[in-house]
Length: 134
Image (cartoon, rainbow, N blue to C red; front, side):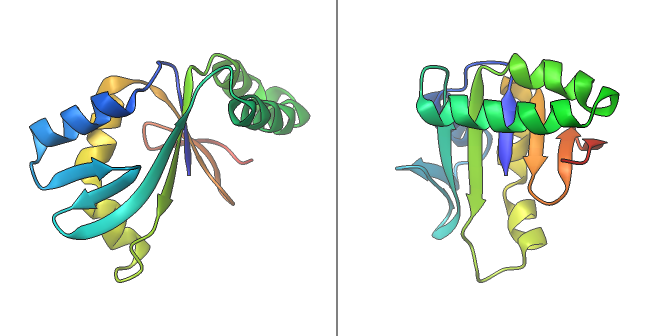
């Protein structure tokens, strides 16, 4: 999944925020841990990196091709200040169980920035509400 944030997310802010909310959380080298369980890997890309530019260009192209249905989301994607990539790596649990364990992480992101989630194979979501299929 990718979170196209309207603010510049910083790993240090995520670490501090999670520690303040739930001391069982830790971010170590991009891995999100809760207790002894490694739940996900995260990476933040910002303007100026090739990966950031490529992801914005690719999603923008897909949204533009949708015509009017994609234009509102396109405007928001083009104003993205950071992209947070989240990959679930906890294979011992169902995806739903892992996502639930990551609950405080999702809440922290909502406090730090508004943005659009891109769920591959589904589309874009804004604060849990479906926006458009991409």
